[in-house]
Image 1 (cartoon, rainbow, N blue to C red):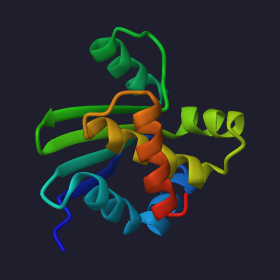
Image 2 (tube, rainbow, N blue to C red; image 1 turned 135 degrees about the vertical axis):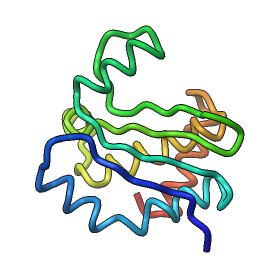
Image 3 (cartoon, rainbow, N blue to C red; image 1 turned 60 degrees about the vertical axis):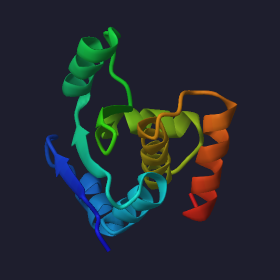
Length: 135
């Protein structure tokens, strides 16, 4: 099976991040392939507060950190950036475990790369994928 998928970290080493990536390294490509297809090239990068704030300000005009950003680069290529620190805060707000919330965010980002915008249609798609992957 073709994956066309890369994961990188640009944040200081945190035990949870390394353990999370090790435990879920096979799940991310499977999820990507189901949502976007095997020919889609995806880069997933875990970054810190400063970097995601800078990206959010530059590309969305919002001067604040967020938990996830998705950038389509072409029809078959995109990038997802996830901020573990902000995700940890958001996971608590939604009463979710951190691992579950990161996987939820990944699905959310994949749906954006599929061309979806926030709303009931996107939420329905997210539910479908969360159910499929037990998230």
